Image (tube, rainbow, N blue to C red; front, side, top):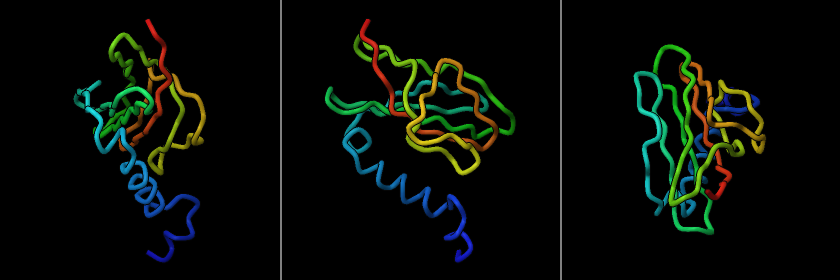
Amino acid sequence: MQSGLFEKRSSLQLYSELTALRSGPSFLKGDMHVIVKNAQVFSFTRHITSGHPTYLVALNLGNTTSTDDHTVAHNNIVFKCGSVVMTSCNLHLEAGSHIDITNLTLNAGQGIVVKLYDHVL
């Protein structure tokens, strides 16, 4: 455990970030919608009324790389991109960077949380 405290991004830090994110309204009270569910990837959104962000959580729980369309539609709003909130330790994307979720590739064991940008239809 001691050595993990000095890594650039430890598992302890990741869990702390996830705990903080989970306390937000979108995760505490928001609806969950499954987006992708296949042999490799499980993804879902957490969405609450307007004024709060919608988040995509995507996890590759399989053994191989998977590229999937994670496009989300809620109440005439389509989400095709967003900003990275956090990733698993083995996925090196900067928090805040823009990401297209229409063609998202995750290697085995990788996960990502994305704050989605909305586009009204």
